[in-house]
Length: 331
Length: 305
Image 1 (cartoon, rainbow over the protein chains, first blue to last red):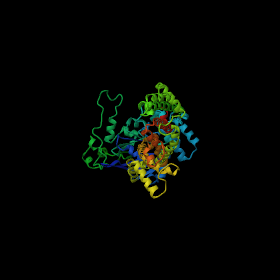
Image 2 (cartoon, chains in turn green, brown; image 1 turned 180 degrees about the horizontal axis):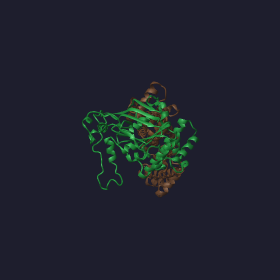
Image 3 (cartoon, rainbow over the protein chains, first blue to last red; image 1 turned 90 degrees about the vertical axis):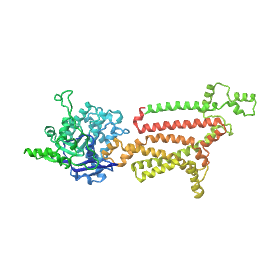
């Protein structure tokens, strides 16, 4: 399958008064055309930093490096500022976590929906409006024509997120990065928005990187999953494989934290992963998860594990010597 | 929007009425007017005569409406000190003050807003520090001293511009610079902080994610939101410059409203004081109203209030 995005060894670091914060520590990531990749991880694991780095939206002081960062055959890191602007917005777009504040309060929705496509595709105002109305309708916004003249404060959070989704689709992008788009919404609205993103993604054949901390969401929509911990991908697999056969102790821990209706007894103890995420300032010695891991062995303390194929398949990779050696021993 | 403007007008009107009551009261809080008009040498009969001539024997409410009715017709009576009607005194002075205030504000705005925007974009660079230094100097330097310095350099030494008076537009250049530099720092700082806050907001990130040009992000998406508090500040500053530019007016011997007010206050010339207070207050009210309308045009959320 053709890869729309191919990233090798992505690193992001931010200078802080206490030293360099290495938020993303060498991520390998690819997204196939028309595929839904979920990136899962807890707060501060670098998943938002990764998405901002891919979009090129990090502040100047952030240092972004990568061996390769190819988008549809183009090296994103070698593009000029202008060329990058052209790619961003037209060929890759983004949906953010906070629908309440992500729209400019001073401009009508029509204005904000249309400005990107008018700039990138040089279409007329009327054409842009037509497309906006069509997409608003597809995104489940009632009275789409009327909305063009409305302002963000006249809409609820759920509706605003639908507008953001329509906005992300305006230029028919190849890739949409959705950074926790349902986190700030009510549970009922969450389910609707998830379904909508999945539907539109399949209908338009857009590849989506969906960033979330919620494995329940992953189970519903993902084709493939990358689990992140402390700025690294610790496990990546198809959604099916990951839920059926998790390998990394962190993934297993996350899965154990989810109560299963009918299986988890009311009032029983809900699992959690003990300990906290290590500080990402400076170098880490050994495996980043070692201090919270129940399966850790001697070498975990000093040797940083690399991402290895599981069962010889590139489709399922794990960054854990215990998971991979126990397999080798079994063979 | 029309409803909004109508409501604001209503508020403005009621404030104007309140101010007129206060400025009417000013006159009467200062003691028995008939005695002070008649002077220390007068007899009781003369005082009584004056009381009747000036209508001071009538009830307060009657006097107020009588005065208000004349005021609406721009008749503020005669000055006690200057041999002239209050209105003709004011119509001589007001244009001078308006020109000075308007020029100074225009100058301050034209410098403050771009400088604030640049300082915010180049935060923590030498440009930012330079802008802040200029602002601090403007705030710390007494305006009379700056005015005198300007006179010494540009009028006395270089002979480029006149030192005082208000005959031609050239006479207004130096005072407008002095007054404008006094008004500029606050506006520039407010623009800078506003821009810094807005540039960090989520909707600017959205605008960037659409791949818009940096100029479109800054001028279309950021500045419009950042400048809202600056509009309100500018209105207040202009109001302040209309009433409080006494210092600059005396340094440059401009015959403006500030100087007239000062002369009237020192000479107990109450009709003049009263009229000046009322006129400046009405200007304040107009400016606030205008600022509200401009802000409502900039930010649709303000229109509902």
